[in-house]
Amino acid sequence: MTDWIDEERARRSRGINHPLLPSEHDAVNARYPETTLEYCCECGAATGRAGRADDSIFTEDGDGPYCFECWGDLASKKGVE
Image (tube, rainbow, N blue to C red; front, side, top):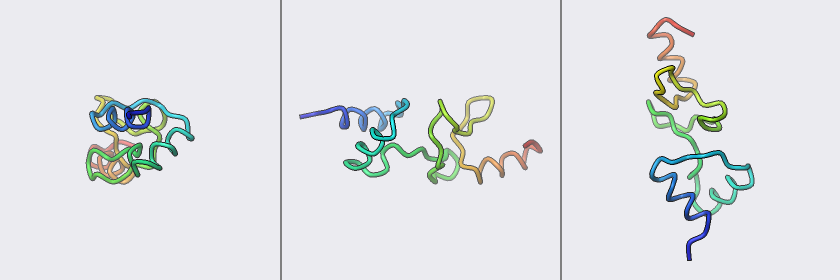
């Protein structure tokens, strides 16, 4: 039997993310560890951020998300902050 947690995992596996409450993140990750983590598009490490609608790091062109370290590398290569 499929429930909302299974559906959320299936959406995220297809790259479809949306905001969740902290308790919802906990419920999904309890069954499917690290499912709701956001990963850097450059290095693959967890960004430690909350998603596109919150504090994730994206370029003006929409590339991302980036972790803080890769964003710093990208900014220094382009000469921006």
